[in-house]
Image (cartoon, rainbow, N blue to C red; front, side, top):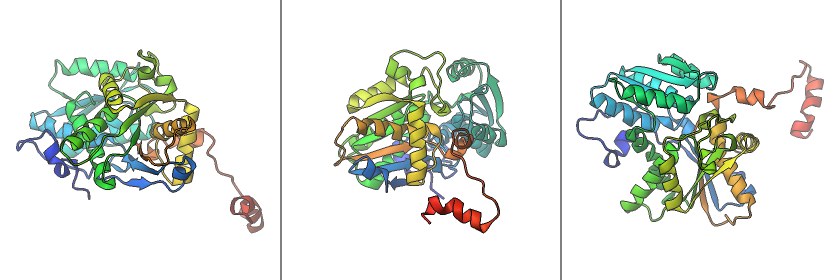
Length: 353
């Protein structure tokens, strides 16, 4: 099992001798080099950071372990969050592991079934809200101001502190920061965290450069791109269906200081990237995680010369979080009779006779 981000990167985290060091094996996720898309997109080197390999299947575990640990240190007995799904699963798991009560507010009817199943299985108290994620987050922030319960959304600085460790791992593995870091943007905590991590490693003399941060929102939920909150965000990529990111300002800082870009991709572009990841690279990410690759495809199509560039796409969550997406969007199988001759005919096109 991984030693966990708190042990591995203790010197870079805001923890003391009083902080309990806990782990469910989060971090040390694979950085897989592309075998197909690197050539198709004419990149020098293209890697996928597979954050779906964390304990609950998303990048959220990196920050949650630190936030929960600090909650325990402060004497808290309960944690709460608003969530589009992944935060609820992570909070519920770490809450269960540490014996804390976990309360989750989710936008009613707008969370992938796999994520809801996780939170329920881990014993969280789930409260559907008749509204958006942004409204649910406003509610929990107001609640925690007057009640003894710890908020573990990414507005909690310890969440960002833990999530920055993914940037450390990339540098540790490839020897320096990449030239470009492509990443989905929802509540904007992750792009903020990666930039913090890369910046800290540069300041410590461990890396020699900084990447350009390339963030990608869904076009129906792109408040940073539009420059104004989206009251009713719409996208099939539920993890980034957020209309007023809590870390908006910090994401702008990451974009501007790195000389990067925050753009948008359509649901069609996300689904295309989702399919290409799975069928050409063997990587099954949830739809939102494919926004990073969709952004790279869009960027490359503009005629950019990427032939000498090292590029990392962050695949933020496991495809099993939202398995219905496969069936609901035409990724279907062909039924065949239990007959060898008919099977041969059916497979002729697939295997070339």
